[in-house]
Length: 144
Image (cartoon, rainbow, N blue to C red; front, side):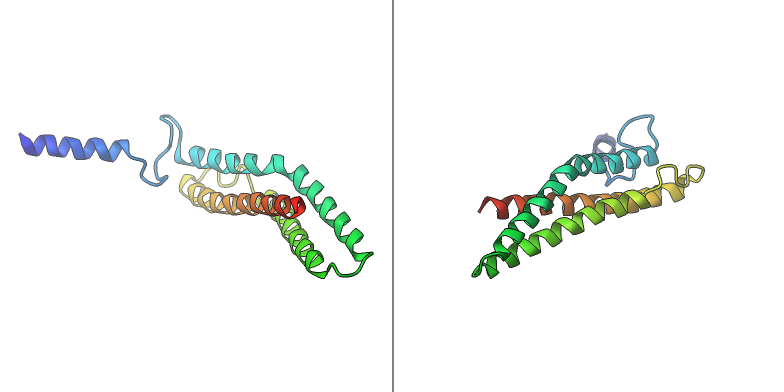
C-alpha cells in the first residue's frame, strides 16, 4: 500500500510541475500554440519600447553633437557613442527579428513547428533583452 501512495505522489508531482515547456501551458492548447503565445508575449514586451528607444537615439545624438562643439568632453562623448551604438543595435535586432519571424510557418507539421518556435522563442527573448538593456543603459547615461 505504501508503494501505491509513493507512486501516486510521484505521479502527482510530475504532472503538477512544469517540465520545461515540453507540454502545453493550458489544457486544450497544443505545444506549438503555447510556444507561439510565448514568442508573441516576448515581442509584445519589446515592441512598445521602440518609440522610446528611437527617442533616446535622438537625445543621445543631440548631446553628442552639442558636446562636439566644445572641447574636453572626450570621455562623455565616448560613453554616449557606445550608448548610441547599443540603441542602434537594439533597433536593428527588433527589425531583423520581425522580418524573419513567420507566424504561420510549418503550420501543417507540428513537430517542425515546435522546433521552429523554440528557436524563435530564444531569439525573441534575446532581442527583448537587448532592447530593454539598451534603454536602461541610455536612461542611466542621460540622467548623469
